[in-house]
Length: 159
Image (cartoon, rainbow, N blue to C red; front, side, top):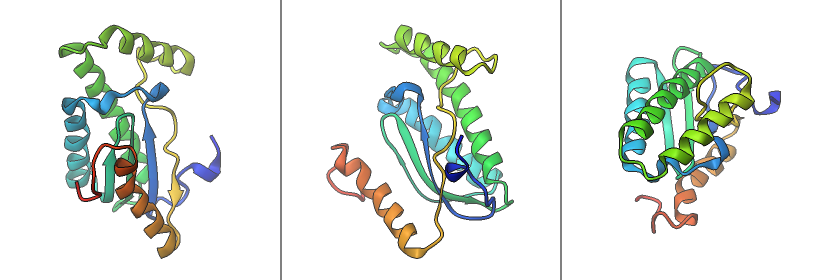
């Protein structure tokens, strides 16, 4: 993974993009969106993750965040590990019309990762971009707000 897109300054604010393997539309289901929302709340309350802005798209998440305890990498790692398990469980336990395909996709991704896991939900990395200036922060904040509008998921950014 490129150092340019990794978290190098654990105490700083970053724009992060976390993507589902093969860009699968996992978050088209409300129950899976709720897993992310509940996990973000937990990490905010219990792990010191300061979330300035977020958006859940159908197959990825954008966050503008930093960690109070100067361990942003650890907070995001824990978030992804927990949500991966919960999302996989959600596919197994609920009436998911794409269950067979998703199981195949997630197990194939795990086999390719060489990490001896049964499944992989998230792509490796977080496409981390350090927000060093107010201008860059504002650009990324606007991107977070406008991404679902451009994708046709909502009509207005405040939705």
